[in-house]
Length: 524
Image 1: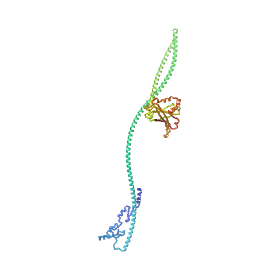
Image 2: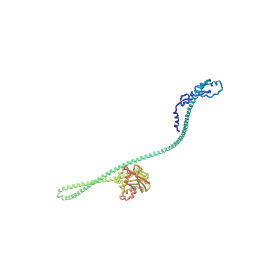
Image 3: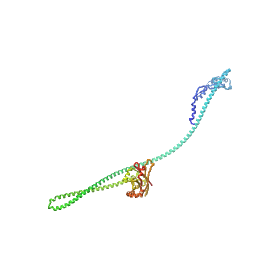
């Protein structure tokens, strides 16, 4: 039973009349003050303290004692006289009468006394009813108090149990807190150790980044030099082309000049022959007709001067042609030297860019500008080469190649791809010959990756030794083969290449945003 339910009877009691009248003096008092008033009310009847049998109101008790007949007897006699039976109380102010009383007065007095007794009995019955009502109220209050005390005891017991549980829980919590605190301290120590290791790794990473930044700067400088060399080579090619055109034009002009000179030389020879004939005639006719031979001599002298000028011009043109040829040979030598240096630099840059690949045997190659590369492959048979990657940090070095337009009988219909073992910096520490299995995966690129439909092909890769001469032997052999020879070696091609039809590219999202991803997984 809850406290709220227990308080309802008291609430009902408190809703009764607040004031109650006194049954003796008819004054109104509150329920709590009525009991105190009854202890002091002067209208309550009390028996005479001298045992004279009279009932006197409390407020007239002292006056009755002064006039009480028993007072005289006690004064005259020292012995105690038994008190007659008490007379019913009267409500009158004084109940004693003189000794000499008439019968009628006695009867009237008795009637009055009987009436008073009835009144007193009525009042007493009403008072007893009130007292019984009050007793019932008190009993209900006692029951309510007992119920409340029982509820209080049960609540106290439950509170004690709750306090015990709370104390036990607090003890458990304290033990758990101590245990958790110890675990937290251990975790904090581990975290501090991890922080130290993280700081050390971070420092090493920062140093690696700084080193990588330096290498990148060096690579950028090398690339800048490479670009400048390429531009220089292009300029040299343009100069050489211009020199070639100039030499060709000069050769054409020299050929024309030679033809003119040869014609003039022929004419000069004829003129010299004629001059010889004329000189002979001159000798013969000198004596006879000196004046008639004078114009012929002048003409012969002019022809000799012209012949000498032509010979000097031919010698000058020959010297110029020889100088141009020497310059052309020097430029050609410089061009070949620059081409050699450029090839060496490209090889060095390729090995420097090995870090762009991976060293765990797992490499994903991103091919951008797919449409342009496909067009270039169709027009020029371009072969795409991937960055170098390794099977492990100090493992075999691999390079992937893709021909988007295919080769041999698959040309124009398939994408062909292969993986080659190339010379690496740690080949001397590895086992040879080497046999590897490579899974080549053309990645699908849907919005939901769980619905991807990748194309997976397997390829066997083999290399006999770590010698660099095995790097491109097969590639050079394949480049030198004719289409008919390639068509005859279909079985060998199927072992060395994987083939993906062009029609498969349009079925799913293998090409998305003009980008294709090819994954290479090396299985040892």
